[in-house]
Length: 391
Image 1 (cartoon, rainbow, N blue to C red):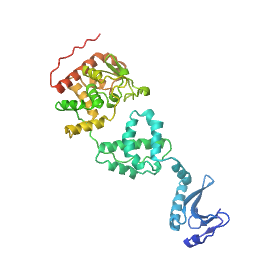
Image 2: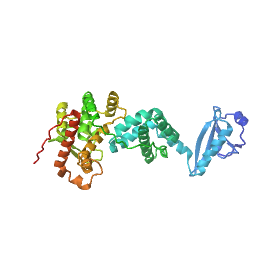
Image 3: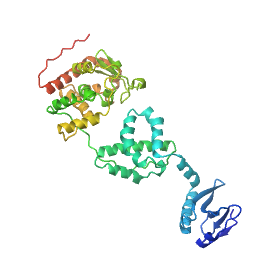
Image 4: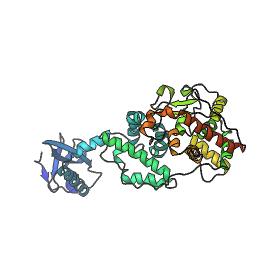
């Protein structure tokens, strides 16, 4: 193949004439670089190298698209990669075949997230779709750089927590793609996360009646928010609440997902059993549901609307209602262990997991006392204690 060697110049390349069959003219200055002339007269720069004793052809560009000096520089880079043990042509082919970021993100959801991540739908619809797909959707995933990631993170600088969540969602996709040999590196690594303070927001005694009244105006979303405040359970679990799981006043949540019931499972994967206090049971009677109790989502958006209506600048999230309930448990003197047990925190002891029914009486007392105190604050009236009798 190396028989036709010349000291290539721009003029020499312009004067090369087509023949009956394609032929090569090799450059004597840059190893591996050649000009291929087609019978049609088309001329293109090629880099031809050997990888594992087999020839590889790497197309650089049409000879009219770049100059000879640029072709030599590019050829030098290709040959340097070969010297390091790479196969540039195979890597280019692999990069072109892996797909766009949107295609890989969809594969990640179907092949991994839906099976292993209970919050996959929220992550994909609230983080990936609105903030990553518009920017990267049509790009080959291997072409996305750290600078691209920094640009997205900077664009969300006014919402530092959201920026961190988007970054984490992107990183999860790239990490999965690395494990599948789709990409060689994760461009999200080494991108600095925004500093976040742990939230401590709870509703004050003055705020509780205001928010409760607004909940009453928000239909099923408002009813779900009331249930969240009265039970202290996670927003996603409240939204997915099923009447099939309510037995003799207890809300029994399967730890594993139940797809046919659209039940996502608990966050820590452990079956959880929580007593529904009197106001929560009354709320269920008002909703009068069969199967899915609320069947809603977007509680965050509803809370933002309510905060705006009330002129609350220190925003309240649905999770803050759970925190308010947990804080009330400890404020009434029941202790952190009771709060962890009722809110199904992962840090519960092994004994508690295996012996959770032994706390039934205590948990009922805690839930009734907390609900009673909350309703006293909301109504501004002292209520009579309900005496619970259990066999």
